[in-house]
Image 1 (cartoon, rainbow, N blue to C red):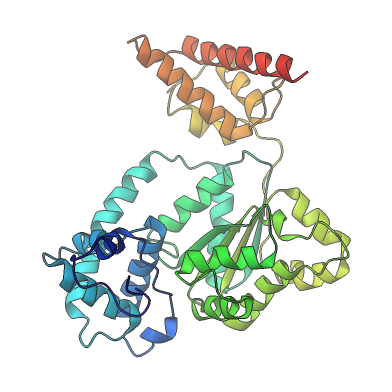
Image 2 (spheres, rainbow, N blue to C red; image 1 turned 45 degrees about the vertical axis):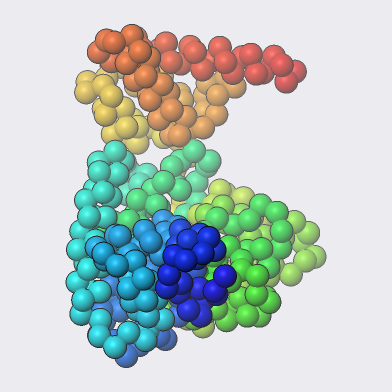
Length: 366
């Protein structure tokens, strides 16, 4: 099978070529390829490249998205554009912009299903600040605060760093090589390269106009305090050398561990322009925007129960805002199955159902 990093497949004469048409496009992002282009053109290409990677699109689906009728032509043109060797970019840029409008509409639907809260506004403020100042932000909060979904929504919003944000989750197992491999995958580089080659490939994919968001950032820290924190050191170097913004999404453990080490404090915390610490106690203003999606005028009884869920005050049920959303969705499904309008009684049925299920799990575990 032809190597798609050197030359795109141009036919459908073999099973291998047919399979490659559907395989994830994996052309490494190299911002140097587009330095000679106008900013508007390179912005469209960067957006399209990252969209292909985020969606895991293949050559055939990419060509269809841009409205090409001839698959072979689509592959040749898209490949040349991504490699920066296309003689004229007017046509593909126009096609990309047309497709981008479709994606905006789709993301708009996703956005309507996501409700802004004081928590999400705090997270967005930290991300906005990091992008505007090419700095590092640390967003710290308990598990279940909605940090991951909130950063995902932010990355898809046009008013932000849309199309220029790379998002990865720090690996739970494996060392620095695995971590660099995750970033390589996110920017289209080969994650099986040597560690030095991966480092260089990642550097080529970032500049002051791009941002890297690392979720579960507490995993960046070595388990043994005597071990060099290579993952953290790499991020510091990436930020310093390439001038890109960074966002570390983590629980309080990360800052606690960083504070224990003067070295790590100097290397990381000293570079954080705006740390965002999400409140541990969530009140009605934090939960009401979520609840009113289901109950326009929730009773005091419902709001009290929701506050208990959001603050992990229910026995055996932990999850904060994530758990609250799950219970509300379960209540909606209960009402739908009963073919009746959603009412507060269904919310308490959903709570009782979860409590019963968790009770069974608890008894089995003990």
